[in-house]
Length: 267
Figure 1: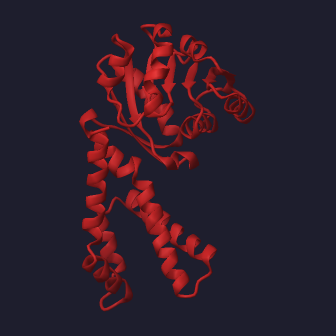
Figure 2: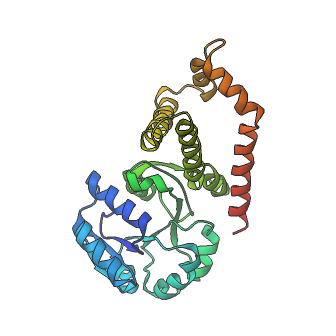
Figure 3: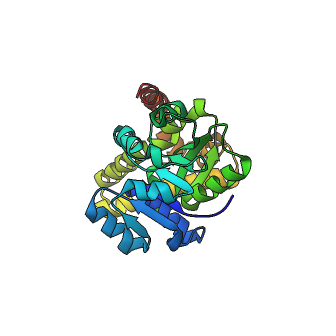
């Protein structure tokens, strides 16, 4: 596939994370990126920060882009599509990051067959440590999908899944940073109660979560095995684990993810 203009409709936080990742990794030149936003201030910020082409006209980007990211919030998707659908060529590859909008939903908005990839990135993309679930319709070739995955991998892990798993992606990665932030905050609160200064408590808690996640990803060991490694006989850690089990920690997390998945299915 020709590596031409990468376009963005919307320049919000996630669009900026994607653009920033692509530029940092050298996957795309700034001269080959064009972004549109209705807000003059947003357009100005994107131009100054990334040195990319910008405009307040969505149609201009839709006409120029070979790969077009629909980086608008789900509630604004229909409005954005209505504006650009007649500007999209049959060759344009569209990438949607809108939560809850299925391939069929988006195709219906365009009112015609389109070449579409749907993805669900998460907030850590903002610091280059995102996790993105990706699926495609039957118009996308393997070569084209590889190109999209290269772009999405610029700001973290990207993995292709079947579309029926996208609601699970929302539950386990899309929304889960909020659960982890709550966990970090709770651990820090307990450390503060034990006498540690607040800023230091956040540092210790956050670094422990980061390190633990790296151990899971880099060792390939089962999380339960890693947990057992930390739990010495009659030690402090197994006592803390006992309390978490007593309070229903695992069940609460599973219930939360299930509620998130169900909400995503019904959006």
